[in-house]
Image (cartoon, rainbow, N blue to C red):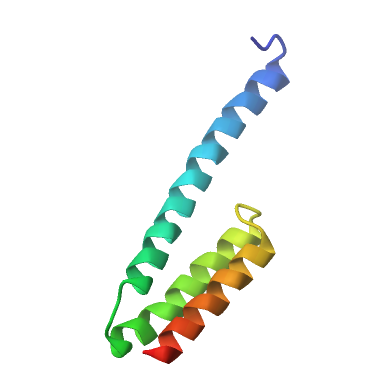
Length: 83
C-alpha cells in the first residue's frame, strides 16, 4: 500500500489511464474486426480512413506500437483494395 501522497495520486492516475487505454484499444480492435468482416467495397472504403485514424491516435499515445499500427493499416488497405 502506498504511503506517500504522490504515490497514491500516481496509482489513481495509472488506473484512470489504464481504463481509458483499454477502452480505446478495444474500440479500435472492434472497428478493425468490423472492417475485416465487411464484404462490400463502398462500406469498406468509407470505414478505412476512420479506422486508420483510430490506429494512428493509439500509436501516438503509445497504447500500441507505431509499427503495429502501420502493419494493421497496410493489411487493411490491401484488403479493401482487393474487394
